[in-house]
Length: 393
Image (cartoon, rainbow, N blue to C red):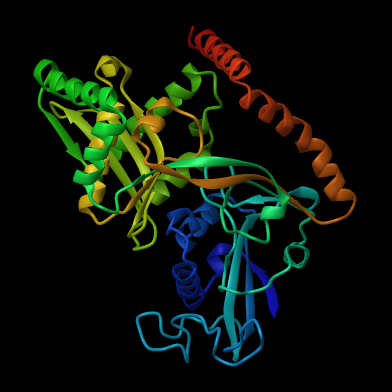
């Protein structure tokens, strides 16, 4: 087994195809954040982005036998559109895994796109035994920080400090079945939201929804609304960072089966009143940045948008909407279940890891303490709102 580190743009097309094939074989939900296109986009706006490419002798498996563990689509694994994708670096070697990350000073690494990526981890051949510390050593990392580690990442899970639910909408039986379930599980929410949509149409103009809008002006409006929302609620404005704005624009123009940007917009009389930008694969829509025009707040256009988005996604063959980690009343009403994600830091023994732990762990523990106590969490939210009001003056 060999590990080499490259910048995302240095990945060859055969390696990208191998990444996709390994991901498809993992059995995990096809979250677009785990696809090579997301890592490549981050690499264009974050110079410290890297990918560790794990290769092994062609056709080897966990017990060393030939062909039993061949990467789907690799030579010897059968014909198909990904045929040849298993080749990585050098004759006789096949891609066995990919580990995207961002390198920082003093060996302090972080998940690719940390702060905006909603699913993180490595992409490995099923059954591959890879020691996390060996992987980190090859990457010259003393620590690797994550906040949305995907469930099933067995190598990294021992380093998780806390787990969270990422609410999801299961659309496997279609929108009609979901809507019927919503009428039973959240009848008041459903009645109120649909009534507001009708009232919006009567009082403000014709309501129109576009699932995959390509107008850049609508994307600009969404980012302005979201920035104002962050400031209004006293939170860090993600869109104040150039790299996040640039990343969203790059992904808005990305169109691949595994990772495509989708801008959904609710219009009233041809005026955008709510929008959402997320990433989709063939079966998963990762909900990312929703917001709305506060002038129309009394109609709850964001909630109307989510229902119309679920309906359109189901028509596109999408089976799951991942609403993302984080508590919100609307998520509790919309969700049908949840996935598990984790926060923490993988450490490699040494003084640099001790330094990382000393600088990060106290703050993480304070946040966790407040988050898990409703009274304190409510007080913290009120304080943030007050800060937001001061900012707005």
